[in-house]
Length: 235
Image (cartoon, rainbow, N blue to C red):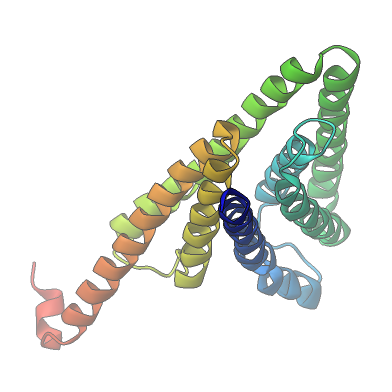
């Protein structure tokens, strides 16, 4: 009986981790339309490459945390972030190729800085720290990185409230963020790993806020659109 329960528990744990990988893939492919436009116009226009630089660093740190060298048994954290790192590197490369000279130099410098920072983290983890301290060190770095990443949509939330438009907060992107965070929260709890579940619980809460705001703004916009046109100009 105990063995059977353990097997079910392990199955649910892996199911949560695999689900998180699947939902994260939706986030990774979401910038593709932007980069199709960049390649079509052969210009980065007013787009910023900084989010992809930051995401690349975040994926590298979380990948290192999920690796067997740092935290054995959470390989699904490594797989999702390895895929994410590949996507972000491709986006950064395309951005550099089509950016104007000043942006090209800046992005190249930032990319090299990210690689250098990651190399320092790996070096310190392996050569300076023992197994327990290594997991704690990289774990805190990954938590700080993930919380910062999940908090970034707060600027979009502010913009949505100000403009009363969900144009800047796509529904499926918010839904993917919520489902990914929820899945990895469950995965982290199943592994008794606060470095996984703490930032993802925060991400889940922020995901709920985004979805609730999306529903409210969308409903309000539809109601406003049914009002007589003359009311739009009443001050």
